[in-house]
Image (cartoon, rainbow, N blue to C red; front, side):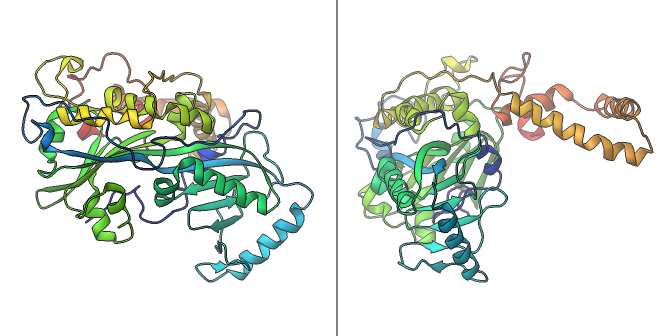
Length: 431
């Protein structure tokens, strides 16, 4: 089986493309707390049976599925740490341990509590330490510098399901304290929310494609023969990506997460399906979730937005997608949000993010000297004029509005006016 790309079976360091997001994730002026409580890590009990209606098979009755558990399955946090006068001694010891680990996969600390990895996460984090519950990355700065964090933690799945978010965050805080540091606060950089169901009849690609709303968002899938194993909605690097996949098959194949049998309270891994949303820093900021305590209070609202507004499975019984009948199983998926917390209505803002567009200005401006050198031009005015003329010719033969719409969807921004659900049927292939 090909497992979902972002769903790791062992604690993994954050993706390279998260580092840029993390550099803007810390604001030392914010007050931060820890997250925990019902539905934020451990298994949750179902709130009731799903609604039984007459609908398309295989989800016509609540007996077609069984809710198993839901929770936070992955969490990356940037950390502000104040080290104090002993930082020189501590950082010196970290560097010696790092050199001792060179050429290996990692070596044990002197007290056997953690592993020192041979490399950090350059250029921001010099050291990489691994505990059973999490990976900790540390920078060389004694204190956070402006919006730049000097610490980063990637929490593994088992720790979240067994200890909850609050429990693991306190472990991280305690370990940093043992090193002589003081945690100023945590900020969420990535959060994966998931719900697991026992579905004896399994899910099919045809069911998902013919009932998904919206239907124009980029999707992909992995099949073994004609059997669906993983369905993706949204691009890999989008601020939000949905994964619906055979979690039981993944657990059985990898063999490292058999503890999920206890979470699900089942004796077999067959027909266990997961609905999982991956949220990156960009979208968390759009919901104004800058502090960990903000995320804790908004988990139910996030699930409500994701399962009611961002994606849903509906019977194609009306030309207006908002009036279509929600599949009973997806209604049960949406109702899982009560296990995460109060299902408040969150407001998502796409404004106030100048850093995104300014990056492209900086990038294009940085390319201009190279373009001028290739063309033998020496002034900004000549180079900019020629580049504009070339771009004008390039896009005259291509569909610029469609390209903009696709990029907007991938970036999590509202598509430009003029492209409706029915008008965007060709976006999947174009993407």
